[in-house]
Image (cartoon, rainbow, N blue to C red; front, side):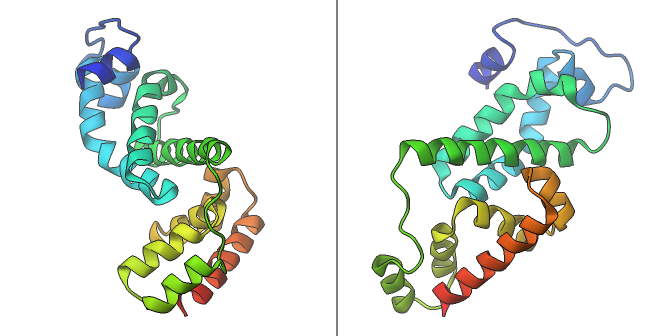
Length: 187
């Protein structure tokens, strides 16, 4: 945590600047390290879960979680009072998507649906948790993101559009393609 604090606050130590009634978000925005630590403790599992859903990798999810919280003190200056958890989830999703895009440039692409390796796997294992995870991993990140936001987190297409920077129509199209691909992979 100390390393994260040093990175997040640029090595400077700032004491609490808020008065009575200040929230952790307000205090952390002013540089209060204790308030920042409380935000990390309260929301790190949420950020990690979102990152894991989008990246499909525990190591990448940890990287994204660290990126989000390292940038948080600076990002809090642009936070408009409202639903902090919703805003933070949006920041986490965008950070995870940027991470996936950057990784895609560095790594060779995953096997596409219909690839003999993916097809053999699906034939061996029917609808189980492992098969579903593998099938989700075969989806393109853009399809997987929309699918998880809609089916797991229950976001509307308008919310998905706002969070990912696409239109709500494109969100519907990607959800259709994600469901279709999963149906084919899972039999």
